[in-house]
Image (cartoon, rainbow, N blue to C red; front, top):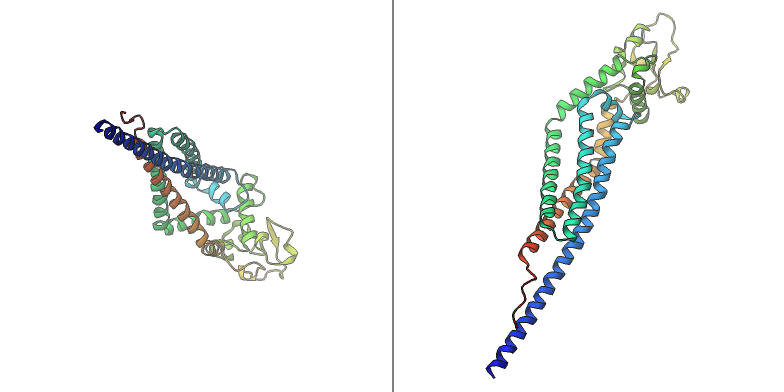
Length: 287
């Protein structure tokens, strides 16, 4: 009778152990599924960051091109983006491999790299926020130098000048702070301001001309200023700031969403890593 009671207890203990193992296995399976979905997202995110970095280096016809050709820091930033994108894609693959095969060191590596990327993103955001006036001043100097030395006949600076013409045409702006910036251009100054940049024009007759200078119809020996030009009054600085303000909600939403998903990936990976360490399925109760 005592032996039957002992066997019954062992059977109950074995059943509970099997149930516990099944529950733990189901929990781990759910964690792995959730992590694999996150790893797929990070693969896509990495590809987007990588593509953005390559676009900055390759683009020749937008405001980014003006900055990239004039500021070494932006070019360095592009290489950083390419590196971060490639690392994010690699970590997504290694993390998925670690989750499926329950390899703790790969999950730990994934967690560490994700934490480094998240800290770097926060640090970059803080630097941009607190240094925005310095960045604006540097940008003003870059654009001012470009406008002052703008020459349609200079083939060496053709790509840079075409990029700036494209910016003024697309944003419907003129100069950095306004059309008066173009009064410092050497060619226009030598022509007594009787010409103006065609890409600034708000006149329909200049709509087919995207670059160079257009001639102003004025009497001979008359005094002309930028206020007499048929150009947009808004400076491109105001246009860029307006675009940023209009899209600030979208930009902050995307950044916050990415940060939350990265944080979720860190939590799930460390949770899976902990459970792999704590569960030992080789222990089976003796009969």
